[in-house]
Length: 501
Image 1 (tube, rainbow, N blue to C red):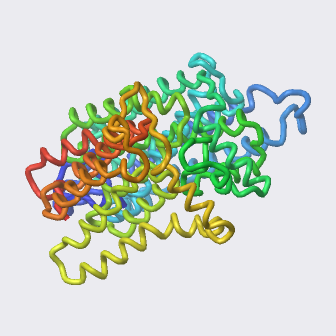
Image 2 (cartoon, rainbow, N blue to C red):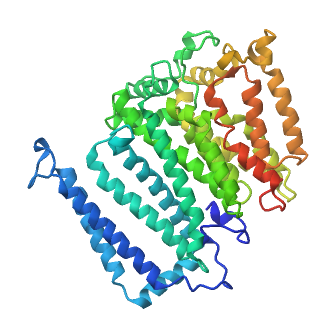
């Protein structure tokens, strides 16, 4: 787990994973756990009453004025109320045993913390999106009781995990509450931007069409064979994972673009907020709360993040997996490489980071670095390659040309901020020489162990954005979360976070 991988000597606001047997555990009382179950019972009952307060529409009625979905939801909430009530009535001895287990099972509690955080973020997005006061309602009002219930349980779980940590005090909750306020503020702002209607010229519509082509049995990578590898006609230039997801959601019934987007904009926003949580947690676990607030605000409200959120590009999903991969790289190498491969399989913006992963592994001062480097390379390539096999088998030429089209296409840049090769009139592969030369210099510094992980990743993405002959606004969002974390790593005074693999 991410948080469990960090040095436990450092301060962290989620003390549930920082068990220290020498710490006073007076706060770990059964009363805290009992209070949690009581509050969860109350939240479940309140959501049940709220759900049943307004009957379903006449056309959907099944029994005493309620539809099938409403009856199922009511049954679920009633069952949850009973279960939480029974847990609240458990004896003091049993509750104390559960508290003791929470204090020792650090990995499981870390996982529970992140699951609760994910549930809280998703519930907050749905809750705000249903309310008409924030620009909606974007989704049916009947979802409001369930969204409110999930939001309440998520927040209660996060707070309880902090209070159940050895030596915890109510003061320890303050960073968590600050994080939740920032995340909720970001949700409110981003949902306000949902009034923007994407056009057929935008990338998100193209990814929808690729899913539609798959649904109709058409290989999306063959269209490039009708072109000249120069003029862009919205070819399928990504590895196929998101095209699969686009296809599956359409196959599930979301056939129109608006219905399809109504699901994916929620997913995009959830990953946006997850990135905010990650850039907050990494400084916060070092006790740098003010810097953590800065990092989260810097990510959530800069113009490039807001632009990508407004245009519904898919970048937040692969960017989150890349950021998580970099955070895990030192202590969970295989998981980090698989996450990096997943990022590439969705959108290969981070492809120039692949040599860094190999260099970092090769340069480790341990025997067997060569074998580990091969394993790292295979782990990175596994997900993109396996997901691409059907298209490689069916039409290898079309797939390879589609994936490499970005390297040969005509230059394009926002604000007419053209790259060096474009201004000099050098096109095609030859135009990539300045980009490759600067990257080689960066790789050399990484080989000499002069640059830590996050600064090296930031510089790599900056070289790509500043030297590539194609530049779109979505490219710059890939720099935003790396900037505060690169600065944090350079500020570090010990080797716990400043990593020179």
